[in-house]
Every structure is written in C-alpha cells, then in structure tokens.
Image (tube, rainbow, N blue to C red; front, side, top):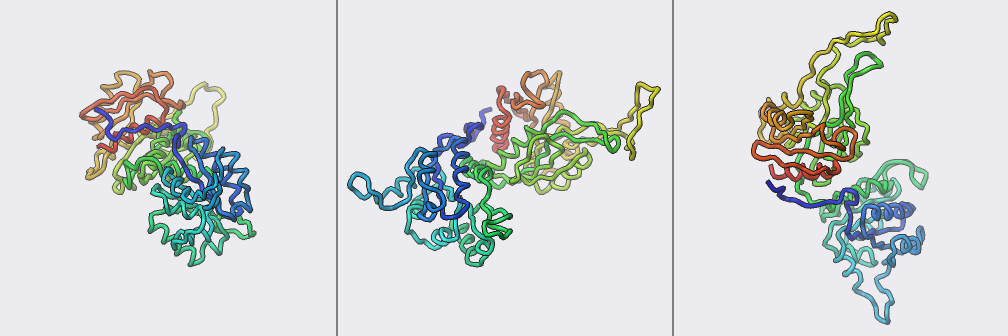
Length: 411
C-alpha cells in the first residue's frame, strides 16, 4: 500500500525553503523580533523583514538587514535606479508562503481591520494570498479595550490567525494580558500554519510515556519509556490541524504547552482518563508503555529492609489492558491504533494483538532493531492493519510520526 497524501517534511528544519515575511511594528517588544528572526532562520526559513516607521525607533533597520542579509522593506516609495519602486509590496506579498506580524500594535491592528493602507506593512498584507499570523503586543488596558477586541474579532472573521497574548509583567509596570507571545511559541504556530492540514479538526486522544506503580511512598515500578514517540505524534497531529488531548504519564520529554495534556501516574489513572475522553475522540492512539502489573498491596509507610534477609517478596496484581478494554467498547466513528513492542515472533504476535484488541492499526516496534525503541531518537516499525503491512526504514521518530499520521488520514 502506498501512503496516500504523502508529503515530505524535513523534521530538522520544517520551514526549509519557505519564504516568510516578518512584520515588525512600533512596540517595545520589537526587540524580541530579532530572536524570532533567528529562530525562523534556524528552522530553514528565508525571512524578509517589513518594518513600520515607528518600529525603527525601537530596533534599527541595520540590525534586521544584517541578520536577514536582505534590505529591510519599510517605505512604499523607495528610490532604486531613478524610478519609484511603487509595486514592491505586490511582488513581496505574492512570493511569500507566510506572513507573521510580531509584534502587532493596536494601531496596525486597527488599520488591518478597517482597510487603512498607508505603509509598506499594510500594503503588503492586503496584497497577499498566503496565511497571515498576527501576534499582538501592547499594554493591558489597550489590549482588553472594547475597540481592540472588536478589531481582533474582525480580523478573525477576515481569516487572519490571531495568536494568543501572554499574561505577565508589562513595560508600563502593570501586570496582565498584552505581552508578546514568546518567539519559540510563535515559531510553532508558523510551522503549523504551513503544514498540510490533512487532519483538520479531527479529534485525537493519545496516551504517552510510562506509568509508575507505587510500592510505598518512595518506591515504584516503571519502565524505560521516555514518551518521545507519542509526543512526536501529538505534535505533528496538532500541526496537521487536529485537536489533540494527551494523557501523559511521567515522561522525560517536555510536553509542548499548546497541547491539551492531562498528567497521570498509574495505569489505573491513565485508564480512567482514556475512558473519560474516549467517546469524544475520533482517533485514539495508545503509545504509552503501560505497566502490566502493580504491587498488590501498597505500603503506606516506607518498607524497611530486613538486615538478615537478602530478598524481599513483592506480590503483584494485573493492571487493566487499556487498549483491550477500549476495543471492547462500541466504536462508531472511532479508529483505534495501538503500539506493540516484541522481541520474538514479532509479526505474528502483533497480528494477534491487532485482532484480539479490535484495533484498526497496530505499530510494531522490535527490540531486535539497533537504534530503535526506548530512549532513542530513531525508530523502525511495521504499520499493520487487517489489510496490509508497511515496513518503515530506520528514521527519526518525528518522521515515523508523520508517516503514521498520513496512514491514519486514509483510514
């Protein structure tokens, strides 16, 4: 089976080859745009800076032109070879894959909302056909003012994507909404904006990481799962337009803030959370390494070692098999995807689990593959459905995640 909707994304530089226009307005937050420029370049983007005249009072055009290695576009009327380059805004706009305005001031928001076209930035935005992202930055009272909120709503209606404002300490000395979203988070929205939306509005429920089964207040049983694979799937599902709920055990990998995550520890807690969200989800993916067993009796006080004994007996009881129990429920529009980790008879055991757990797809990991599974950034898997088997190469886990999501888009 070929992966329909197939496309390649360089996961090391997801913006590679993309032409991005970065609009900078007159705000104290303009200094953060310098860091944003660098981060976009690190992701492979070719960045053209457009500055309002007020922005130049905070950061010089020399700073941006030096770092971008391009002349800053800031005036509609620009002397070139004796002619007025009056159509530059059209050429710049039509060549862009994405426009991000960060920081966007109340003044520029008002211009864009009401069709005022009197500078290089507004003229370029009005001439563009690519996605436009807007990251507001201003003082608290300006941000929450009814005029500004009305303009933000108008811009949403016009199809612009308004990025959230952060709350915190402001240049005025006040605290509250109005802070520019941090550059790292803005880059994530940029990557999401240019990623094909093959999963648009699909509701995903994903569990990730290990579980911890407490023995006493200081000890627990767990495994070596880091959560890398599951978080990679959740991240790229979000970028492809999905609404993602993440049920996360104690992972060692940071969970992006833009994902709706619910933290759990034990297998029972994870099972309960998955059940609670099962019927509102369309795609359920079980990547978590759930402990098969837990201590039968939890000791409320730390268990003391016995000096004359070299052993300790620990009686275990079985945890619920989360995917098996979810597979027993009546699926209407849901698709259930599981992961299997095998060390022998891999394909036969994975096919058996696919059928037994009533799964639509199972992803087989092998302990025999060097450089794969726990702790590694790479993986090699088999995608197994009732109708086909697809073998991947040894790839970065984010590439495996993209392949899986392309297959899911066709289920």
